[in-house]
Image (cartoon, rainbow, N blue to C red; front, top):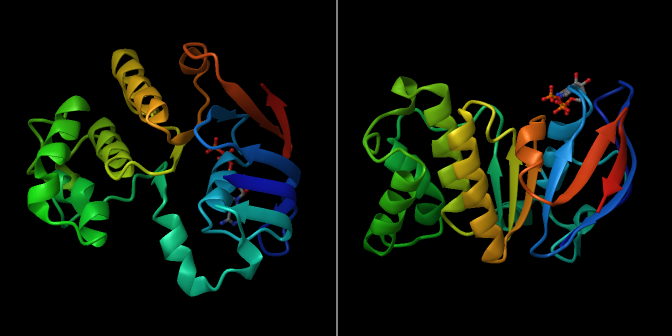
Length: 219
Ligand SMILES: Nc1ncnc2c1ncn2[C@@H]1O[C@H](COP(=O)(O)OP(=O)(O)OP(=O)(O)O)[C@@H](O)[C@H]1O
């Protein structure tokens, strides 16, 4: 589904942040991506989301060599990927409900076909009372859960989440983990970048560990 071969990445003329990464994210798989702060987890997620280009090596995404894809086709591929950014990236002029519904609206779906699903998912992540609120008045944890709901609502083929439980308490982290596992059971490949050992210990999943720009895989 996503395949990296000898991928390297440097920002500008800086040092190589990621070195010789070779791995596959298989269809329907579940994995944690971890490593010390600054190891390159966010950078690696951005490469997988096709918002950064590697400085060397090959990336195949949905069976396509990304170096051969015209820039105009990238948004279509990205639509198959759900992403939760560390800084959430919600649209401040849209309500919680509208932010979560956005991927469906962009796909041209009628509101009547998704309204119930969006509200149900918002309730599931504990935001039932915050449906019509604008992001600036949400707490960090509420923003994070809104971002997670937005990434999940269109049942992406791949979910990439950057520290998705960084702003919530342990019971909510467990609840969100269950949501990711449920999505995975429905067929989505899931990659969760996290420092949270307690979270990782709850699931017997593959671990991708980045250290000094190099990747070790523990199946
Ligand atoms: N846009 C950028 N331009 C230059 N250097 C960058 C840029 N983004 C990240 N870096 C550098 O790349 C390295 C990896 O950063 P990255 O954010 O990918 O790490 P991380 O593992 O996600 O860290 P954290 O766990 O603290 O979020 C760091 O040294 C960082 O300073």
